[in-house]
Length: 284
Image (cartoon, rainbow, N blue to C red; front, side, top):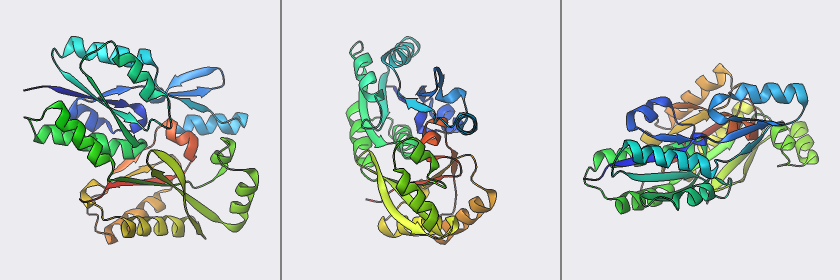
């Protein structure tokens, strides 16, 4: 029976309980504060926001390097003899990490690479599903796991709602005119993940509360979701009253257990404080 070790990036925002339970290996992604670069896991979202408030310059993000992957792959091979490595990647169209892993994998014969076409809690959801599949199918081979992940990623849905568009504007993702117009009209646009790309979704006018209620209701009306796979990501600054209200809305949608994930620095650079995201896997 083969032993499988799962690998993913810190941008998956995986809670420590899953890392420990399934022995998942995490490759660092990075956040750049001017000339200083830090591992995603070594800083917090509020560090990003504090830096922007003081300098009016948005930190930038960068993917994992080939050396990062070489180190992880080599350590796995030394520690777990004859193990197979299943690397489930942060969306390859959004970062260089997947290509870095490809370069590193040339030195090893036991690395299997899969593009999750997801990020943050969406990627984490795919990784957790893969870990549970391996746990529940002790006779599975590498190709079985790859096939499972490639199928499940196509049914994994993710939507994200920024509280403010300031960070999207600062990062050059929307124009100043769009930012001002949204502020004046109190418009909250969502961001969807489609085929690995983060794309503009629906726009909701009114309060933030109204926006996330509409976002959640549309998410469940659009997709036939397995309620057991629903997870949320919250960025530092999301208020407690909104967390409670969101949980109430989810209960109305049949979600009996709400699992929150804290957003790391990478996704926080793009979403800004107070943002919220929602992920889940569609039923077959």
